[in-house]
Each structure stands twice: as structure tokens, then as C-alpha cells.
Figure 1: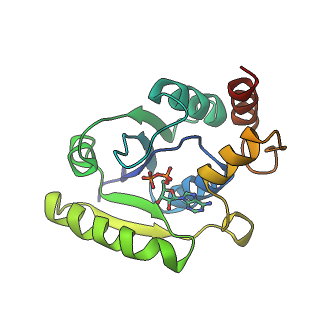
Figure 2 (figure 1 turned 120 degrees about the vertical axis):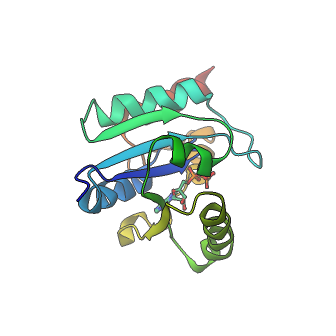
Length: 162
Ligand code: ADP
């Protein structure tokens, strides 16, 4: 049996929130390693550069050996294959996530059949959380500390103070 089962958790993470971290912890209950893959989502205009996003995640997970943080471009399926992932992790918050996620899971399965998409639900307190909402709160000068890890709260503050 392969004792090093790698799961890829791909996303924009613009920026990473407590909801994303909730999913990472759940994935680690099932898989040996989680690779947080920060990718380019062509449908979204990011606030933070890939390097800024990677830096915030690195600082947050603070060198945990079972978590890798890597940027990638191109197809998620190709990146999953490259790192030898057996699963692609996605979070499901509401029914509204489902249709888009279902389409992507089917496409990824065609492109890289060896990886199974695994959907995980966050705890109830993180269900409503998303990066866009956090950015809006920060932009309007609100307190984001209940929603994001400390390094992210600092980066958001710095971003909007400029
Ligand atoms: P993408 O642009 O790929 O959707 P995101 O960073 O917005 O990237 O999200 C990455 C993944 O994390 C998605 O599967 C998304 O549904 C999930 N996710 C985001 N926020 C939460 C949350 N609060 N609870 C559970 N899953 C979440």
C-alpha cells in the first residue's frame, strides 16, 4: 500500500481564509500530504499576486511537514499528475457551488483519470466564508480577524492602507 497518498487542494486562495484552512485540516485526516496549489483562475481578477498569496499561506501553515504550498499555472489536472496526486480536494459550501464543481470534477477526471475529486464540507461556522467577502470587508475598513489567519489580516490591512 502506498503510504504517501498526496491530495492536491487547488484554488485561487486570494487570500486564504479560515474556510480554506478548515478544508486543509479535513483533507489531512484522509491523506498523508496535502499540496495547496495556488493557480491562476482566468475568470477572476486577483487582489494579491501569486507570490503574495504563497507567502501568506507559507506564513500561516508555518512549515508543517505534511503541507506543501506550491504555485502552478496551466491545467489543474496536469499539475495533479505532475505531483502524483491521488485526489483533488474541493470544498463545498452550498448547493450553489455544486454545478460548477461537478463540471470541473468530470473534466478533471477525463484529463487525469488517476485522481478522484473529493468534496469536503467545512464546519458550519465557515460555510458562509469566501475570499471575496473578506476582501470587501477589508476594503471598507472592517475587521477581518474572525475570518482569516493573522498574516492575512495584516496583508489585507497593508493592501488597503496604501
Ligand atoms: P477557485 O478560484 O478555484 O474557486 P477559491 O480559492 O475560491 O478558488 O476556492 C478554492 C476551493 O476552496 C474551492 O473548492 C472552494 O469551494 C473552497 N472553499 C473556499 N472557501 C471555502 C469555505 N469557507 N469552506 C469550504 N470550502 C471553501
